[in-house]
Length: 271
Image (cartoon, rainbow, N blue to C red):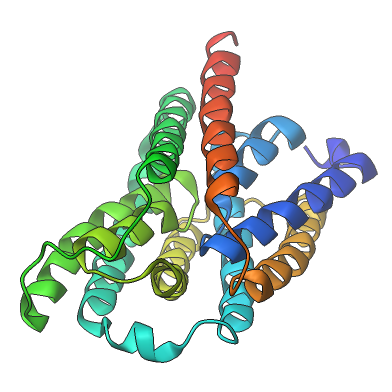
């Protein structure tokens, strides 16, 4: 693997992660679902190496997106939803910790198929969001305790997805915060980043404990290139969040996810 990670792959990793990081910072995502096809197909990492590497770059993207978005999105909006944010973070962190072990126990073939299915599901979710724009609608009754408990339950599912795909789970967190808890889309994006930081850290720690994070000079170069590109992109996207439209971007990204899922499934099935 190290011999294959030459300069063209370094440039490709950096080049792809700038726009991916920008889109992640703009919407409130870690961008892992868009980097995963790059790691698998563009660079050639096996699935079990790509997932923890994806988590590492997601952490960098989220951290810089949080800093830059804080200038455009008030923290008061996030504090107004503290019970559900705390619940989602709690459930997500616990689930991500155990989900990493589950992902490591799967065969590479099954993991690839599961990744393809989850990518397709997330892509369809984004397309549905474009067709039926998120609005500030809360069907859950008021009550901090109830919101916390529901948040823990939903966060557990998000944490499992995070560990399996090496993503932050924002595609699930943002709709949950809007539809279930009544947050506006910009507040939901920033709250999603905050929750995802804890989820990603938990998953990474578990992978590290299992000695499942790939090592080597070539791996470090690719991770550094992706991290640098993500920092630039996330910073630009975070600054633009206050006024940039996202509907067309979500439509395009939903299509990209579905295409990536199809490519992942077909490519591995033919091996």
